Length: 198
Image 1: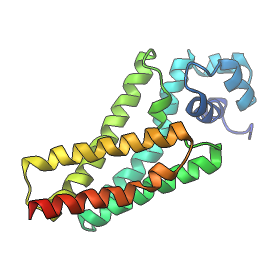
Image 2 (image 1 turned 180 degrees about the vertical axis):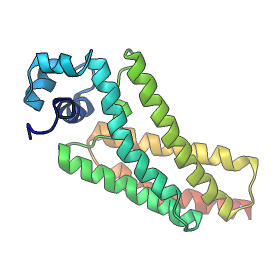
Image 3 (image 1 turned 60 degrees about the vertical axis):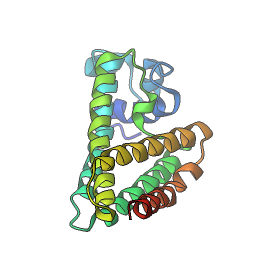
């Protein structure tokens, strides 16, 4: 690891894959320090606690994902194209992270324990922000295929739950196969909804 990077950043970037793989409670400060090539004194100089480091790590992960999701939503293309861009990004990001880390990571918030109140709250806020962006993509794609209705929100929410389920399945099985099925599954559902509404 590059020791010219500030210690706090080295600790955050060392902690992210460890926490993502093993879960917050299973990763010790010693393991983070070893991975970051830093001593424990440096850790506690940079962070008051492991929970504070986790909150910062959540923000780092979200900065990248949030920026990429926002750019997809802001594309001038039609809703179907934006939804496809999101589905492609989702699979590509999991492939990229799997290659870097050696396992299918899923979402970072999946590795955070609810017993870390500030970090859990920060992770949940980012998760809800991402979910709102994704729901707007799904809703727009549904409304492009059929007249806007009260069903649009319900259907978008249902598809969102399917996405979450496939992510959990991918993480637990350490396989990208469930995520690879996401795009055709979403399109099949949208086609079914469109034909039912016609």
